[in-house]
Image (tube, rainbow, N blue to C red):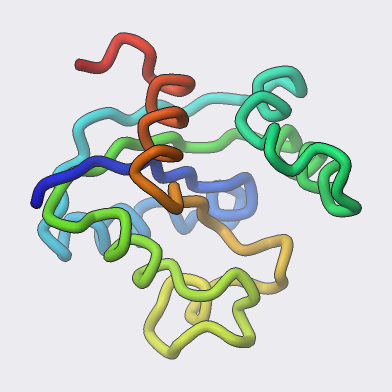
Length: 136
């Protein structure tokens, strides 16, 4: 079944020049990039995106990190793309991520983990509408 998901290349991925490598892996897997934008997130926008984490101890550091530099937001499409992209990213903690995943290969910490991907179809729909409100 073809589906869509939101992918974010976080500020550490952009700062370290890894956007091209990550995009290459997405395309090599056969997924289509149907929308892409380089942008800086405002605190308000980042808070809306991560609203389910408000009140958790990592929320403020997460918002500070996500607003610390530019990000690339993408919508990718393909068969079972949500599950596949999450597997390609690897575990949030790069030291627990499977070899060959983006996080195992390049991430430096639990917080500096390079990428975000929607975890469910419902999250993907909400996040895509937030980042790309005009996408059909």
